[in-house]
Image (cartoon, rainbow, N blue to C red; front, side, top):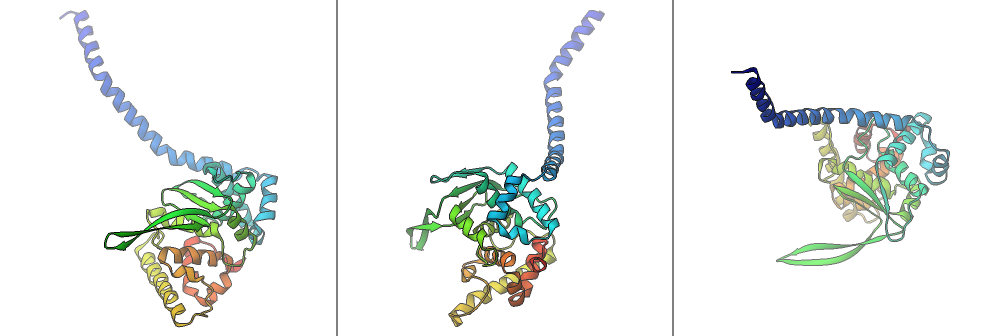
Length: 292
């Protein structure tokens, strides 16, 4: 066999193998990209957290979110870093004529990031795609099965709503009023972003992810027991003076969101009334508002 013929055979074999080589190379490069993605994401977030906090944003925090001033200096600094990452990653959309300004974005982001404060490198609500902001209460249609194939349709005016995959929806006037009084136990941003934490595993059931079976069992025992007590107490005494808003009795998911509001805004009262609930929330959020 001549050398020229061998060259032609080798070239043909290489040409036949080329698609496979391209595929293997693409798979390898794709695998490298997937492995590198968390590293690049963490590096980008670290860079954002290290940047100077804009003076205009600092003025917004002083004017609109007085809870920030009550934090220890190190936590204030951490919160500002989290706000910078949050605003870089999460889009805001105005609805119903609501304009989106830095005031809207920073005011909401600062409150949402309070829930991340105990973690130096949090995930920043990985399922959250966008924040929709209405000027005031927004109306939604609800369909409720009544049994026997009958459904009941009704309209509700809401101050906030959280979806497991997609947006958090907020009424701007309620955002402002919740931020303005940081000790009344009512804060729509804390409430809806607590639902986001609860929904991080896919469903809102009042049982956010915990890393061990022992922690999950203890969470269930403490929080389910407190929810059941709350459900029973109002029926026994209409003037029951719980620090926890009665709306928490709706279901375990709402209980978790409401006690999160209470934990950050009325920690002393919650610790006095339900110390085990306070302890579970302190372990989850890795902060102790009692010390602020």
